[in-house]
Image 1 (cartoon, rainbow, N blue to C red):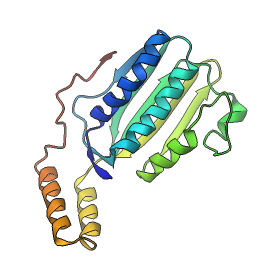
Image 2 (cartoon, rainbow, N blue to C red):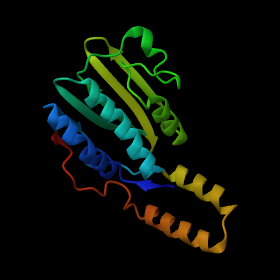
Image 3 (cartoon, rainbow, N blue to C red):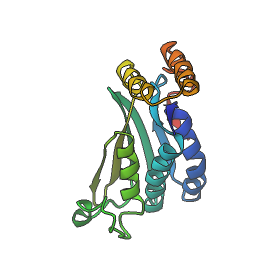
Image 4 (cartoon, rainbow, N blue to C red):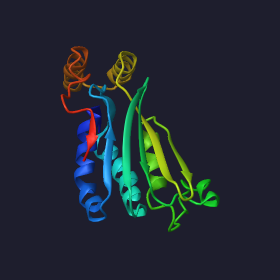
Length: 192
């Protein structure tokens, strides 16, 4: 179910799952996240699954050091990068990293599924890795912009019954008020 999402809250849920595994390996998790992030349009469970797949691979393959999460606005997208200080991915495996048949011990599971989930949201995903230096996975999610809201409303209006239109208009009013942008008062960056 696609809806306006506060990305920080979804990330927090994913980190609550991952942090015990990171602590067990004495890995530090660092965040570089601006305070006022715009809402993204997404399916909460699928966005959480994207984060869990990437973060769990980072923890799995990192024996010491840290996992870094950075988020920045790159209109009309939110760009999320997750880096680790693991062994990196061998060059010959990098070009097939998103293949469904790729089941290498060195690349982790779920990256083909992660790619599908990101693309379902209209985003992109890429992996940069240097053997011996770690890996960075960067993906994007669409920000809710005025144009996106209008396009969604226009497309949905053609297929909705009266009750559904009423719900959509309430959501539209909520979005129009601007409470979806920068509603979080959480700390912008720091260590976990």
